Image (tube, one colour):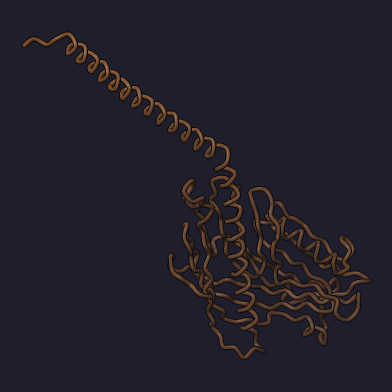
Length: 330
């Protein structure tokens, strides 16, 4: 039987409807793909803007916070050495060879998800020279021996940042110094004091030399590195009072130090002396001997200010690096 006209028309209409739905589905799929591409492009643009405009600033802030953290770790090192020095004094009942371990976190400055890599750090023990020489003086008499020299060593932490300027944090002879490539400042003072205990014009100067014993060593890492400190002994080296009943007296001295951070030491000596009423050029001088890299502090003999006592003591502290990634309690 041949199809009639109505059947043909019905088939044609169904074909048109099917074609329309197929076209609609194809157009919907294309629109979905375009929307997906646009969304991916928008996400990529947002991520690119964030990484270019905001991540460097966030990274800079994160690494700055990391510098504060590592400065605090080094401050703990200085505090531990100060405590060990007191415990090792001859009049203290504590036994020798007391050890503490201070953790130093050499890694930081990461941004979760966006910049998860940590900045590295480098920790060195006794690789930089810090030497100190004290020359006792009397303008009219010869003093024997007239000088004492200490090789003190030090602990140095270097940062390896990606955004924030690299810093150097240095412990030497009781001082905690923060430095960059151009200058240095003292964040914690050394064990050198100037006091006028009896009268305004009579001064007592105490110099404590902190010698760090141990092998030259260093490590580069972005993890926690333990630093072991051992107190050995604190002992007197010179007391000018011992010369008072002899034919020789000490009324002046030069303190010369070899350091890579002269700015910090010069500022410290000037502030300390002037806070105690000493006048520059009249009672004391501070010189940067640029040819040798030394800094020299001189207590001058004069008619108004008198060096009543010069007292020098020495503390010996062992310092060595331990294994990394160890949980430490102090």
